[in-house]
Image 1 (cartoon, rainbow, N blue to C red):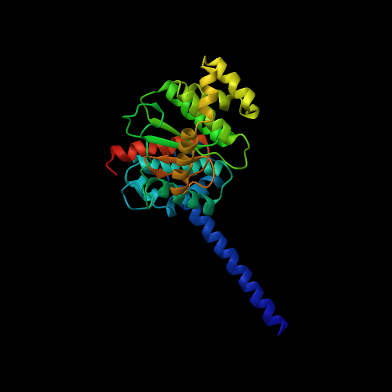
Image 2: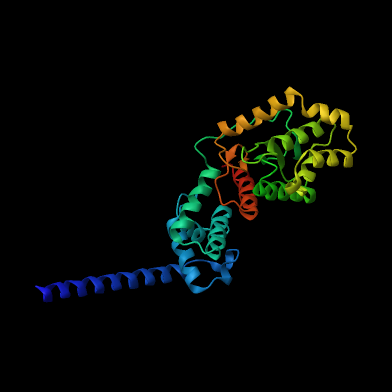
Length: 294
């Protein structure tokens, strides 16, 4: 009986080893089919990284219109913009130490960001805009002035538009968090500054010194911007500004914002990796989809 069990264990071990060798051989074979020189960052990958990316590309569906796997799309048309973006994304993610299941899930999150079950229509009437309001891509940011991730996103968008003002339209909406005791006062300060034509200037100053938020700093910023201090103080206390602040946050909640920053790209909730590089890629991808009529 013990001898039979040992033989069964040996067979199982041999089968597992054979299966692993088969998978390794399959991944290596798939790697040779990928046009690495046409994928951003592909040529610099280590062999094990190439095998992971090849496995991802052989499973992930390309949502750019071809209806096949990303690898099949690249083999048919190495210049397919969406397939190339997804392949470059997989390269970046494997370099960030993500494995096949994680990258496949992140690609699914990208798909839902590009083709969500619902597209929202935020109220942009009276909302301040940075960039060209006629731009084909509109980004709405629901943010808190005490949130470091909001700061990174907002300042990156501002920097991008400082160089390319016609590239997109960036709308800012307040979404103060209860965990930040100066979130509401900061939001009211920026809305009060807007009444004197200095919304974006105050926005930038608040994010510049986000660790010093408080009444003293708000008034220091108002003085620096040349605002009428008496009016600034009065406006911050006005019920109309608080109502507007509540409306902005409520809209974000209705659209599914649970944490900051909440981001809409042409009304599509961004569900992707929360880095500036990946958000910018999603913005550029939206332009590609519009150009392709998708």
